[in-house]
Length: 289
Image 1 (spheres, rainbow, N blue to C red):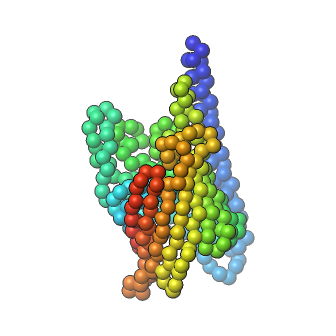
Image 2 (cartoon, rainbow, N blue to C red):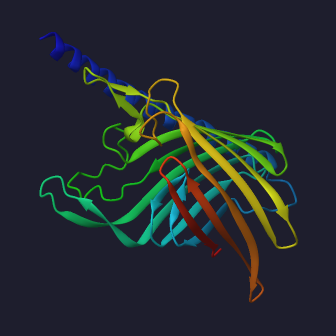
Image 3 (cartoon, rainbow, N blue to C red):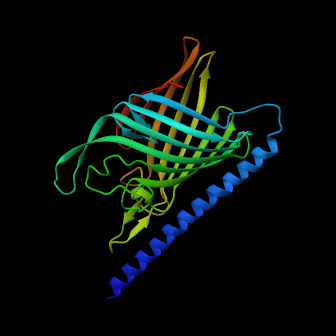
C-alpha cells in the first residue's frame, strides 16, 4: 500500500513538473518574442533594411552530433530562422530526413522494421556580446517511433519515451577563433537517467563540454580542431556513455569554399573519433544554400 501511494505521488509530481516546464517554455518564448519585436520596432526607422527570415539546406553523407552517429546514411538537413535586426536573438527550426533506413525492432511482433531518420528540432539563441551566448534546444528525433509500435506524440517530453529532450547551452569565445561550449540536458529527458535499485529513475543532468578552434585558414579554406567530453555529477552513467564520464568527441574539420556558377558552396569534411565507443567516421557536409 505504501509503495503504491509513493508511486501515485511520483506520477502526480512528474505530471505537474511536466506541465510547469511546458508553461515556463511557452512563457519564455513569448517573452523573447516580445523583446525581439520591441527591438525591431525601435530599429525600423534605420536606413539599412534587413531580412528577418532565412532558410538553409545541407546535403550530408551521414549525420553526427556530440560524438554520436545519429544516422549512418545520406541526409538532407534544412533550417528556418528568425533573427532580430541587431542579430542578438535567433529563433529557428532545424529538420533532418534520410534517404536510407535503419532497422528498428517492433515491440509487439519482434520483427525488424525499416525506419527513415526524421528529426524536427527547435532552438532559441541570445547573443549577449560577440563573445558570449546562451542557447536552448528542444531535440525532437522521432526516428522509428511508430515503426517500433509506439504512438507518436511530438510535444511529449516523458523521459522514458526516448525521442524528445531539452538542453541548455552556453558558449564563450575566449579568442575570435576559439570557442568554449557547455551544454546540460534538462530533467532526465530521452533516457538521461539512471535506474536505482528500488526502481526509481534518477536524473543524470548530463553535461557536455567542448573546445573548438580554427587553427589554420587561407583565402577560401580553413582547418578546425575540436575535443569534447561528457559527465554527470549525479549518476554513474550519462546520456552519452554507459558508464562514467569520458572523452567522446575528438576530431578535425576541413572547410573549403567552392564557387559554382558564381555561387559559393561551402563544403565541410569532418573526421570524428569517439574513444568511448571506439568509433571513427568521416562526415561530408555540403551547404546547398
